[in-house]
Image 1: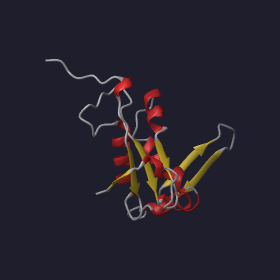
Image 2: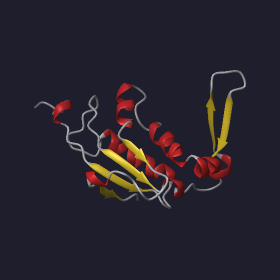
Image 3: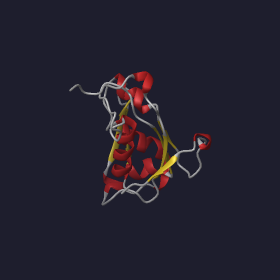
Image 4: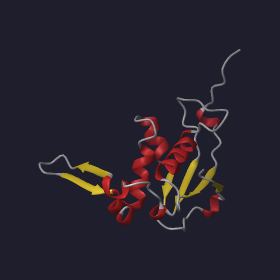
Length: 143
């Protein structure tokens, strides 16, 4: 008996929307990463991008448990001398909520060409409105 290997041309993509309001950041990110990779499908093939498109709304209302708002730090370096920038999770949630979720999801995807291709199917919005109504996205519930 041979294993089923999906072809790039036969992938069927759906659209899903996740409401992050009041939900934990890690749970939202892990659900999004699972659907972006396509691991929820019985036709999952590791070396093919067989995932779906994900829309995350209300990114500015995502929840962080414990003291993470003040203690969790996000670091970025410009590669110039003295170019280290550090921001707390509170600053990220208030000023850059889309980037905060994108960092969490990208850390859960493969770190290669395939992961970068999967990441392009993620769409994050700070508010409740998004511009993908024409795709008729289905709602995903975060547990």
